[in-house]
Image 1: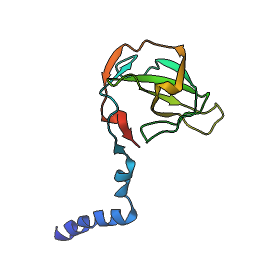
Image 2: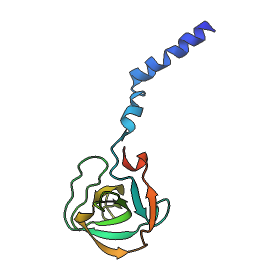
Image 3: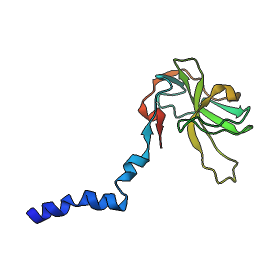
Image 4: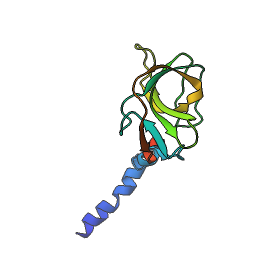
Length: 135
């Protein structure tokens, strides 16, 4: 039994040397909340509220935000509430043939203009730590 305990005691050292223990630390980090509430079309914020077109390029401040290029379409899923309606949450994607995959994140509402209303944003949902988690 003693030799088995010693063998298992070496696993953290072996995993650490292989770089496997650092995966958890690199997987993501919690960022400060931008708001305590958000307006969505449904309780899960899974349906887009509107489609907007970017008026200008937007370069993110940190990993909670998404980069947006002028003219790009943005699908808006939530409008942050509490501190004005300054930030929205949504997704952007490159052209149909692009290598860029869809990205989700926040952006200032001032850099886009609404082009198509899809569903009313009438459901108030509390934000949680995953709304502002960086991968």
